[in-house]
Amino acid sequence: MIKILIEKLEFGAIIGTLDFERKREQRVWVWAKLGAEEFIDYARVCEYIKAEFREKKFRLVEDALRYFAQEFHSKFRSMDYFYMKILKPEILQDASVGAEIEIKF
Image (spheres, rainbow, N blue to C red):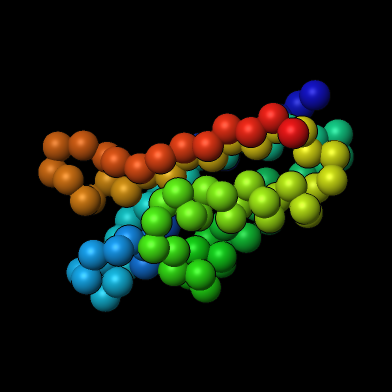
């Protein structure tokens, strides 16, 4: 199996539960690995991730992770591995914070 890799996809998004996070975009970094027995166009995956962040305006990073795991699994039926990490580098001065998910289907 070959995994496609996306490292440090960077864009602005509304994400978070705090008032200031709902009012303006903040920088988000995304890493992803998808393993499947079919072709996966990583450029389209990147555009899809950014578009869904813009549309959904997730409240929790964990919600975004669950959403993308389910969406990619339904889009790529042969996908047997999914990993994603989402970091918010501007929330704390001394750390980038976020969450990650790893699923073997």
